[in-house]
Image 1 (cartoon, rainbow over the protein chains, first blue to last red):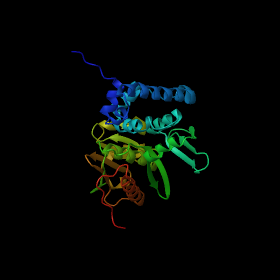
Image 2 (spheres, rainbow over the protein chains, first blue to last red):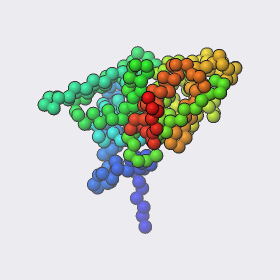
Image 3 (cartoon, rainbow over the protein chains, first blue to last red):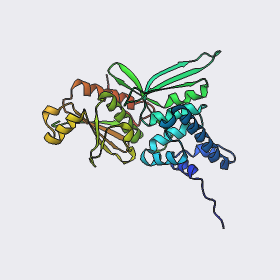
Image 4 (cartoon, rainbow over the protein chains, first blue to last red):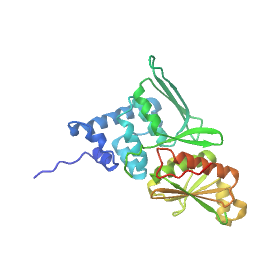
Length: 167
Length: 129
């Protein structure tokens, strides 16, 4: 009798309660390699954009983050196969790591082009990062943003998993 | 903070709620000192916090306030300089002064509204206007 070792990244996804991300694929065995490729493209995009300051986006670093902050990884996993642009996935990771959302601008017209621009700012410096998307699939991330008011000033803050019934 | 009060906010997922609360405190107080109430570990940045291990977090307004809390404890002169967050299954508790300054009252009110949104809410009871 032989046993098939489960892909560690698939195990992480299942441990995080996001089984659907694997199970929606047929055959299921193709899911983990596909999701690893999504992550690899995001990692490449991070390096291209941020150089030596790029966050590491690998199955290993995602797993390490899961140990410390499982709620953040749940949120990330929920959008990693939905967003269209690797850059937007990098942006999501940066918010999870503490970047502030300085500005959001969305242009939508049913008969025209879509444009989403999000500017992040560092809480520790004047550094900003600008992210643009022209694919409406990337609008999925807007549902995950927390909001809070400070006085009369409303802010988007944080990136959170949707409540899909898990704890 | 002598005779403080606890504001209990029902939430579906307490780690996410604690996360948002800390992010909000960091916006409220730019020089905040964040401390694990159980272990004494201090965090100067939100990014450094491993929320999976944190059940009680003390947020001091600034390093000077944190130092005075160490020296004086719950002294009336320190009112409005500490927000104490506790999470448990289905709840986030915000412990504040019994008579908090307007800034803290507004903060708690805003946090409660944010946590009543779909992303965080459990069984939520809204306060009548």
